[in-house]
Length: 286
Image (cartoon, rainbow, N blue to C red; front, side, top):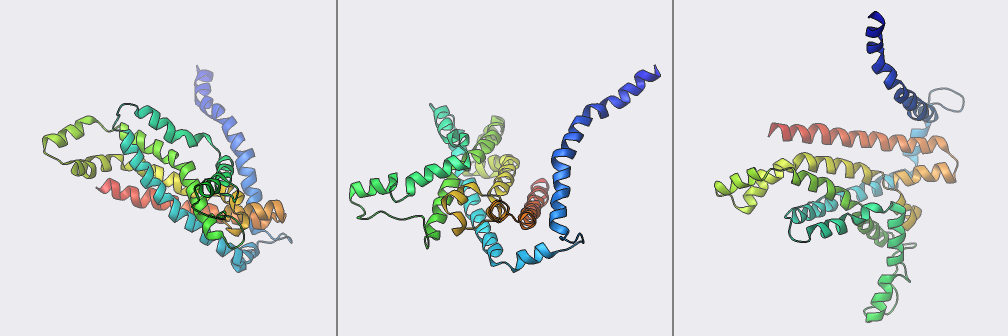
């Protein structure tokens, strides 16, 4: 009897042990090595030299600027567009499933695939320039990539990210809309609510948790944007994740690369805290 009781006590811990080993080997150990690269100098003493080097580097501030520009441009447009698509598809008209699949199709593409497709469209010999030349709208190809064309490349990247990642937000919001009971909307009809009143007083408050989740996930992903920017613009539009890769793979400077990664983690943690605590608490108070 005693041995059976001991087995019941230790069984959950034994079942959890493989997960602990996996996390320790593949997450814990790399984290410790990363902190060692960041905070320990070559002489083996604690140091903040890597952060000082980063702050004194103009490329870091440029990368931070472009990362925030992408963040504040892409995320609001994606959330707005995805919300409109979700409201449209949620009407469940004839053939709405086909529209749903078409909108969600880019989810099957990686960021590299999306970047290559965009490059084939917007390059000087791409589909867009061929179409414009054939119609006689332009006489020479429009250049979107190259030295001094960073503003054009910026908007190409924004369009690519909106097309590639909006379906993720769309799926989350559509799932949130589908769990709203029709009883609430019918009650609104009984009380004489207009369409706008039902949206602002019933639909929007009930879909708010899904909206906050989608906003949080997409903000974190947008802050770590890398593949599309690197393939379409390279270091003409530096971003934090791209500079981390450049320092690691091209300059063979792991301490600076790890410091870039640490900065990304800190900012993403602050963003998560803002969404989860501030916005969620306001929603619960309402």
